[in-house]
Image (cartoon, rainbow, N blue to C red; front, top):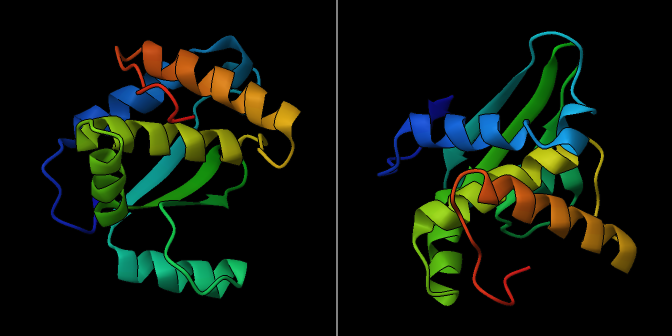
Length: 144
């Protein structure tokens, strides 16, 4: 992982959250055979807005973007630390909790989950909570 923004969170935190999330049976079943990688870039609002405009056609800031990989590289995540901090404050929790949520959320998108319908959203939220629980993280009521 390359940290593109100064973030007071150790790289090992992100690595551990992601590793624990991949231990969820539904997640593990969608990973490529053998070793796999995911790149996580922690950056700011300006870059997320640029990436969102360039790749998704949306001229707005977002919290996390997922870019599909190939072979053993599952893909790349770009996360706005600034947005993560604001969202954490809005939900009354630590920025690390929001960062963990965004990492898991992005991972699930890379593996094919979506939240376009109520059923999809319910399943994605269930898996997200289970993955975060493996890291000892519980979300505030109403966050998902």
